[in-house]
Image: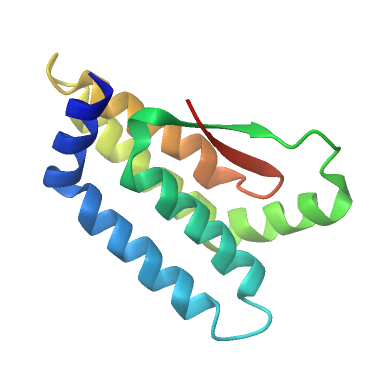
Length: 124
């Protein structure tokens, strides 16, 4: 189911979202100040490409105050809007029974989009 779900995800919007995240990450990495945020966008791009076999966890060490400050800046500048977009698509997809697995992936992406600093993406 994971392979089929990822292929359907890729065909119906996953590739476009991946390209958008990569373009945004490259644009953020142009400036020195934007590099940490660009790296988080690349993390979102990685999960967006194949979401059915990815999950994430908080890093083993405590993220610390720098990670918290960066998450607050991220939330104000971009995280809220990205999470809102994933919420909207997740709700639209869960209207039908067939779209529930893809809606769940959007809800999963929404939780990562809110606070990406201090998290590590892992393969299942």
